[in-house]
Image (cartoon, rainbow, N blue to C red; front, side, top):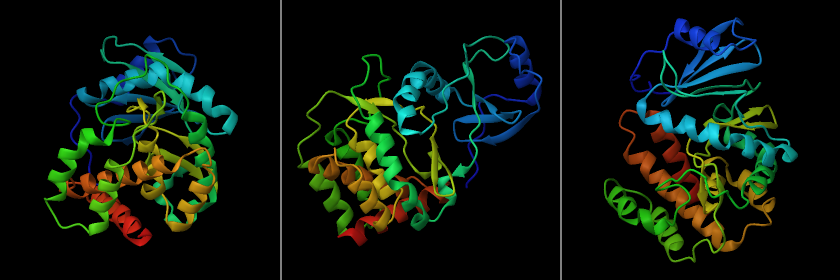
Length: 293
């Protein structure tokens, strides 16, 4: 993985420990260590069953707010499907010395599906379909707004065509986008949308799907944005399993989902100068679109 951008403010072990003690949490003295510093947030492992999640950039502060607002509701939706989400165990408001919201969340065993070959992911494709069926129900009115994710594809046509012109893509990529644009939009009430569903945000333990994480971009709208995972996450065999297990999804939604996969592939490809991992994922998605044709 490429390096994350520099943090806007320092987060140290001493700071995290101080926040935990100030919050008077029973587990405030458990062992603490930095698990990883992502693009937007840092995760500090706390003991063996918890983690502390803090924003490391000002732009990501609202993402923590979004998770604190809705993850308890999302957890209730996905619990019957046997899939976990990082529902905050403690949702802390902005207070000194950090002055930004932060959360204590469960620590899930396993690893990101990003570290599995695509062929291995077929084992849990049907389970992911079940989880998304549970998630994609009518969203509450206070669902966080997002200008891109879950919205009509037409709102991104200009940006996608501009990026398509920046490099050479197989004709299938443009065709997938244009097919989606010409397909009827989502005709129902907006549903919950994860908003960033890729293999790095799916926790697995071998053949088992454990959890969906990183809900900072959670929003409401067209479920096609999440269902683009058929191309973003899986190979042909996994995609067949995923689609077959999604009997509730109509053909138009799959066309829009394929269009979103094309748009995401294009974006990852042309905006990946300092992110070789993005470029690699973009190439993988393009390959899946081409192979399907």
